[in-house]
Image (cartoon, rainbow, N blue to C red; front, side, top):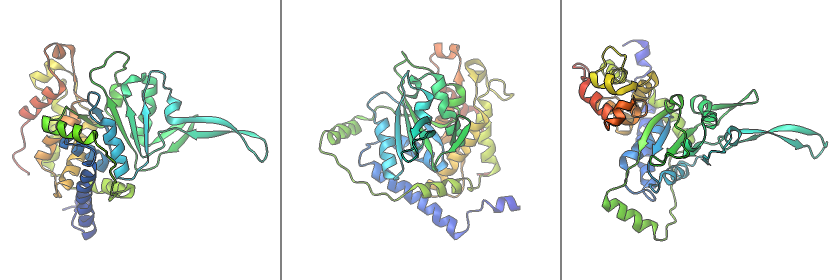
Length: 344
């Protein structure tokens, strides 16, 4: 094994202890979230994987499915600063990032420009109904999501770590909304879909939320832990066949790729980017660790293909008229892209 591979070997006692703490931390966060959030196991897993990787996520669901409650509760459980921005058509970029204001020095009476930070200066930012504001304002998040910094009036301000953006959208209202640009969609690690819960879970939601409810949260994971988990995730080894399988799924989603299927060529306008493969591998690494494993399997890749790819595989008008969805295309990719014989 060469020196580069030795650097990612999780054999040191400190690494093992940190991996155990990450798995235990996931279990504890889930337990605390259960005090307010009923069901939605897959949604919770994807939100927590976003935390451990250090990615941003887009959460899609009809009103009343606790999207805002979930992220606000998560911030309370991990004891991070939280800010919520209600996106509206008249929201300006400075309402997000902050702006310079004139202040008078009480001692000297002189006036000077002072920067007033916006709500983006937090740890967990909830961009509520992000598609209700024009692209100019949406773009105010781009630098923060990718670089964890903002540039205002030529000056750059670094955001405090850890920093996450969770954005929500309502899928049934189109009037007065602005579709997110592909460049911004690509910066979201996951596209998380929240559906109506089964009847038993919905009954439990109604029962608990119509009674007196004042949960107290035990905070067992903090910001420093999340930063350490993020570094650890990147050191998890991935066998070459697994890495190539993840890349093959992404490349097969591109209509102009030599390996694209007839389905992709017929129904897809644009396929997934390189960033999709990066996030697919990173998310699979985090899933492996939170499952108590120190290696990534093909099943980890397959389990996360939908939330990573569904917002990056852009279907054409013909596909929409035929009732096709991005999820259906991802299903076809999982069926058509072969799993390498060697490796895991």
